[in-house]
Image 1 (cartoon, helix red, strand yellow):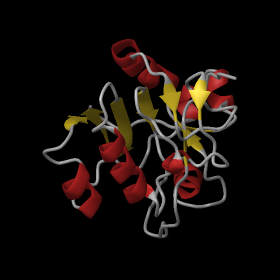
Image 2 (cartoon, helix red, strand yellow):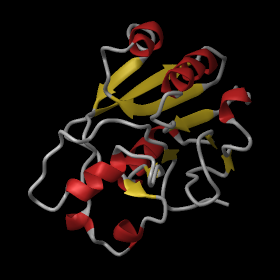
Image 3 (cartoon, rainbow, N blue to C red):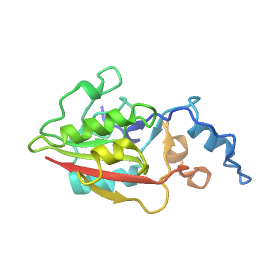
Length: 179
């Protein structure tokens, strides 16, 4: 168990035909908006900074290869159905249609005593889930710039090929819920 890559996020379908890139990044952007390879992982250095502050004990959106914590839930375990109470939880959920369910789960679990939830999601402040479960209910940290996620095998990261990695086509936020 344990790994060096990060919590997996699944990106849902989107129209990427309007994205134009002349610097070689078009294929990477298309992949990030498709279901061809829908597993993108948290940058290790970004996670390490948060982990230094929070000392995470649970990753509810993981695979054996991508987990950040000794205790984790896979898609088979279904982290949405599990109890997170009493843990310090790092959540980088699937970014598809279920994202609202994950945000609601973070809010609900974050109300439990001795529970801290740190949620990494796209900064979509116009959504219902943002207004219903984050705004005024969580500490919000806007991330300067764009995070560069990598695929599940992390080959570009592990080989140090950072210049050929493409930042996410969306800004991100961290929402912190403290029980």
